Length: 296
Image (cartoon, rainbow, N blue to C red; front, side, top):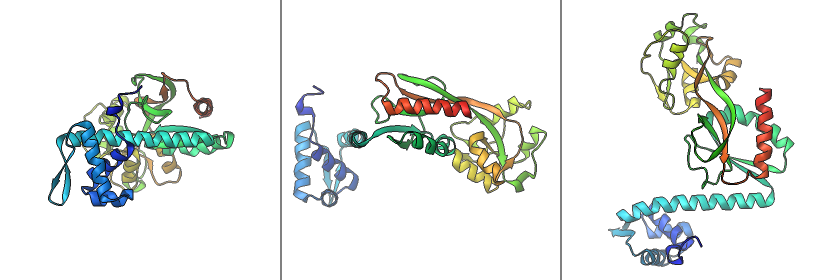
């Protein structure tokens, strides 16, 4: 038994509470859930009675969360999200083999997505469902079968499959420099673009190419994709992974600011929970991915 019954509210009560908390109105919540306002009010009163705590208070014509309600709704939303994801996975798996994969935006868009058609052609029985995550998370209780991880083997409770190190190269718009610089320090005469998750990337690059320095601060981005677009529009020089830079270099939208590449602070891995057997779709995906890495 998961928990005593008295601690397990009904789904309808949780949905009514979440809608009221989000919309601030029992009337609007009733419209969204196709119920009456009185039914919404009864659900919330029943939930408060079951928990023995006030979750919402009326302020004029609006409903406001109490302190207990503010904490509770955060957990309720996560539980409802996970329940919906589990239901979707169960429905999909009943129809075919489903693989729920959390991906990093740049790696998923520029390296994995262009190759997925080959996997789909070879494994028509598997449906790959992709969701973006920027940071490691609790993989075990999540709806994901596996995830793409960047960094080191520091994610507890998972199996690791090494994919590749991150190799970075400085690129910019053709009008900014004209041709690659032979002297790395010349890059310091131009704006340098930075990534939030790699704050010392430029320092490491200059150290590796033999010109240790403390590069000036510049525009900061949370994803490689937006940083690449900024470079494309002439806002500065971006230090991009080679798999992100290659399409732009190939069509001439970006050029090399220097032809010196360096390894970043980590590598890419496929990870999956070690506390349960890998499902057949994941086994097939791992075998395919190993071949892709071998052929790259």
